[in-house]
Image (cartoon, rainbow, N blue to C red):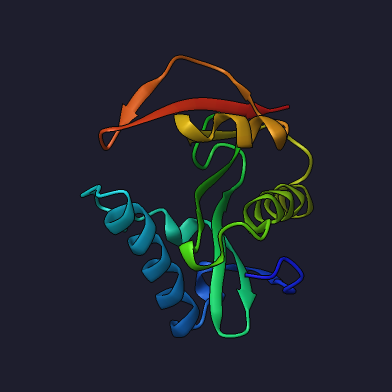
Length: 153
């Protein structure tokens, strides 16, 4: 897949999402977190309603998405980025890096400049280090997948 495909980014509150956008987000998360990672868990966790949702589109395809939380919504004293997901169809084009850069900038635009916490899958530690995150605690299991807490100050 060509790396010069232009991704169109947007951020919306849950209540602003169209039915088609919400469906695309939930489908992508299910495709990656449930099917690809073979992990049975309840993705629909009642936190979507309080989050902002970032979306990266190429044409009609949702390429990548995150959820953004203000200070104290997900972690006490911190902003948070969660449900970081990229489409398997578009891997290798830099969408993940662009997604994180966009999500970090959107946290600052929406909520002000604060430290951001994520619960990262352990195998993605190097990727998140490259986005300015540092490990901030011990490895733990979430839905039988190794995770680490990370913070971007």
